[in-house]
Image (cartoon, rainbow, N blue to C red; front, side, top):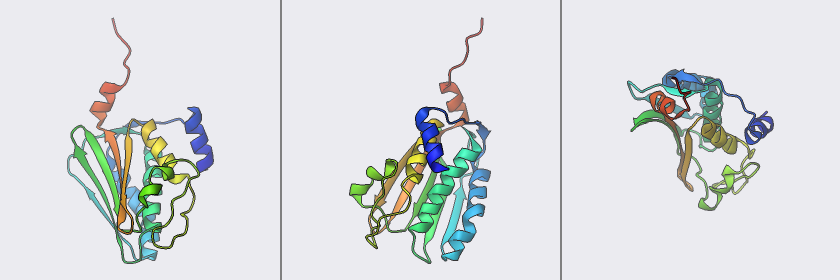
Length: 182
């Protein structure tokens, strides 16, 4: 499925059904869907959603896929008894979703490369190469497709933080083309 999705994005054929949505319930559903996978590894998932966040203009299913991928990666690379923090907050006219783990981290030399399709980073603890190679590039492209940005920072052996930055719905609407009326 990911290969098909990334092909659609690259070809400009990925269709979004974007609406103005509250991010809190979307994050709650993502956490709920993956909580057992984290519990099986004795990993605690914490969610903090700031009060009174503005709505974000996005496709719910697509954002759920992005968040799921980020959480699955965080679980894969976090040791048992670790913690993953998920936070939604406002920064200026944006809603920012932060997924932070205290996992293996990513080697600085790998950060740019793992954002390319089919590229993999080296696991900081085991020296093995990570799984997949499509999840982060697809998350990046799907975020950009919705007018957002994805940033990644990591310290090898300490963990990774990924931030999804989406314009608030009013800001997003102002930036979209509106037909002129007479």
